Every structure is written in structure tokens, then in C-alpha cells.
Length: 164
Image (cartoon, rainbow, N blue to C red; front, side):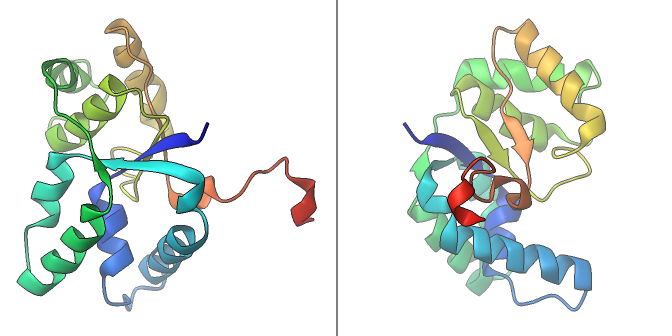
């Protein structure tokens, strides 16, 4: 059975954005495009109304492109359980107080049993320092935290020797 991936807003933003002049961001955009083109079919992809809301903001043309990508994904429900998990992620310092939307992404992913939360938000989400705290809070509420990672971490099967 294919694993599940929650597509967070930065992924659709990097996927559809004009190439950045910043070399790091341009590399992340290309990695996102490469992952989308070659790897997404290995997973069941999901998103949430939170991502749709964020992707709708800004330039109307850019927002339309982001929403077109999201239209092809399965939409997760924002349940009461998901919302009840988001607040403790902030209160117990698993995520900073300015990151309520990020806590909601984690809450929706965990409450729906998603395997991976894919993001380029390395400040609050794909942050090794915060991972254990995020997992502890999720476990405290009887949820398994999604593995939060960037597209770089979801390329191929490291045990598949046919690629060598």
C-alpha cells in the first residue's frame, strides 16, 4: 500500500513559482519540481482547507496556479480532534506561538494518520530540533506524528539496488 503525504503550502508555492534569483530557493524549487514529476505517483497525496486558504492569498494569477495543483489532491477533513491537537503543540512549545497555522497542518496530518508532511518550512516544521517535541505532543493525544520532511528526503527507495 502506498504511503500518504500531506502537501503543505510551501510545496505548491515552490512548484508553481517563477524561478527565484536566490540560489538556495531556486534549488529548492527545482527539487520540488523534480519530486513532483518523478516521485509523487509513489504516494497518496492529501492536502487540507488550511493549505487552500493559504494558497488562495496573494497575486490572483499565482493563486490560481497553486489552486489548480491542489484541485488534483484529496482533501482531508479538519476535525475537532485535529484542532484540539494544534493548540497544545503551541502551548507545550513544540512549535512557536507564531506558528499556529503550522500546528494546524501537523494536527490535520496526525489526526488523519498521514505518514509524511511535506514542506520547505524548515524554521517551524521540518526542523530537527522540534521533531521530538512535536512527536511527544502528538503521542500525548494518542496520535502518531507524521514524519515532517522536505522533498529531498522523499526521493526513491534507498534500499532499491536497481538504481545503482
